Length: 257
Length: 257
Image (cartoon, rainbow over all chains, first blue to last red; front, side):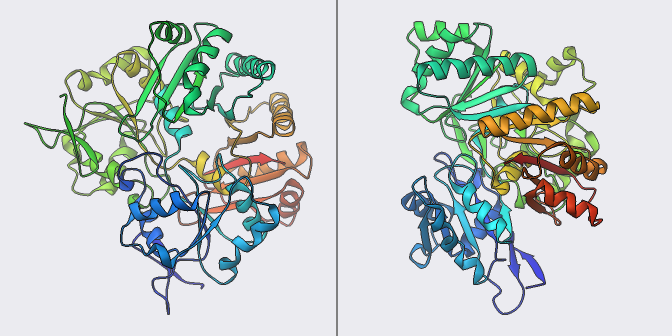
């Protein structure tokens, strides 16, 4: 295993099994929206999907569909799938790495976008690193990075904080802290919400924060209805009053001033 | 211009000029390391590079070399390049958007990785949005996201803070604040350093922070010597004492506990 040759974008081992992939834990981004996988995934990823046999996935059904879209010729029934989600216990992780012990590659695929960013994959990556297995992060769509690029906000300092707290006091306290970090550190604040609450979230932000603060809403990134709108909270409030609604599609929210 | 058809991964306008790209400000990631562009860029990006004629770039020489590597058939001399860097004045931005007024696409290409993340492109994006031009962020390599994926650290809350302050008091105060955010908010802290200072930075972190804190150093991401190492600061300190050195290559640093 000491010598490798690059072929078709994958890192393939020389010798007896020319189609085998270098044993490593590959962090394989999936598509975030409808459309062709080749619009958002490099050829290297597509070639790796054609050769990797073991998958650790957030959702088996979505992962199978993803692989079929990457290449309809992939024989899905020849692959192994193990589920890794918020219900997975730490003692279940070692078994997921067993193919690596046997010299075979494993890919981690999350529900949408980059694995181990806002999903339980990080624990598996940590377990693999501790055992000395190679971890290879692959390029793919990240709504955090795409929205930050398109927002025009400060990208030299930014924080992603996941979902805001649901409970009202905690939520307001978090918003005040975010406001402080925007004003004192010029740090862009990024967060997400479940799509059916998009409009309520914008109304709450407009009520809780100064009207001059800028809110960017990026929806259906990489999808057919991709939309990025940046305007002051006062303008968002007016739009809501006029009855304009955000579509109930996956969106990401960015605040800056 | 109301009807578009997707062809070869680019969004092409129907009708008279079938090879023209939908007029928009395309945020075009560039490669971060040696290797084939198709390993890190989707086919859509490659097709767009073949058709876009106007480029706003951080460094003209690097951008020309990048386009030649994407496709040697691109006629570089037929393209226009305008430099956008830290010396660019705000009153220079509108002229960079002039091709959009004329119905032509413009691409922003930074020195390495995703534009408008840790470079001056964000101001141009903001100017384009204010004038109502469409902004299209494209998928590509981001050392922030790739390192976070491979670190095994919390990706549900993280902050990128650019370079740490150079002045020693300010630097220590920043490190204490980062420590607080790791401990209280479980927020992964990400930062960069110029390559020749890599070893000094690790020594300083080991001296200033508790030994059990985890430091991940990701070097030459997507490149031939890509390396991601996560271990406690106490182990990093021992390695430095043994005389082990980090290579003087572009690296990104992540702290967590």
